[in-house]
View 1: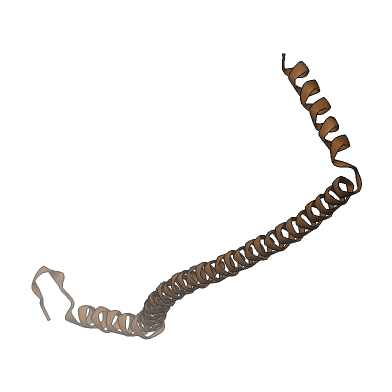
View 2: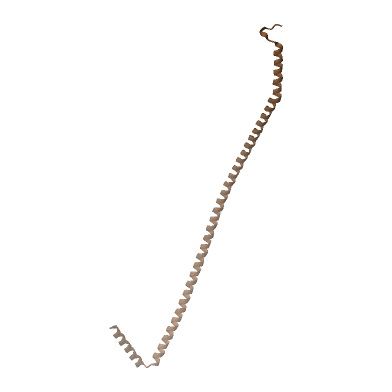
Length: 164
């Protein structure tokens, strides 16, 4: 067979067959396992990314839940502080009222005690004055009138001398 340009079709077909065997072998031995490994690795990374996003979303939900609980706790603390301040104020008012009532009672007792002491002193004074007056009357009645008159004049003269 006379082929122009010295082309041997048998050699070309044989080379083509060898190339197909080589390409098929390389495909089965190298390309397919490497592609499978790369696909598996991509899937693993995708799964890890999905899990990370899921955990992140869960963490955000948990954070939002904690924020809500913190706001509720802050509101509860504020309410309890307000209630405690109100209770303390009421207690202080009650103590002040009791102290005022006690002070008024002590003052009233002191006034009553002073009034009784005044009455006692007044009574004792009146009794002493009455006793002195009765003694003076008895003394006057027991001394003669002329002697009393002389004593009076003497004391009057002494009083005038002291004044001058």
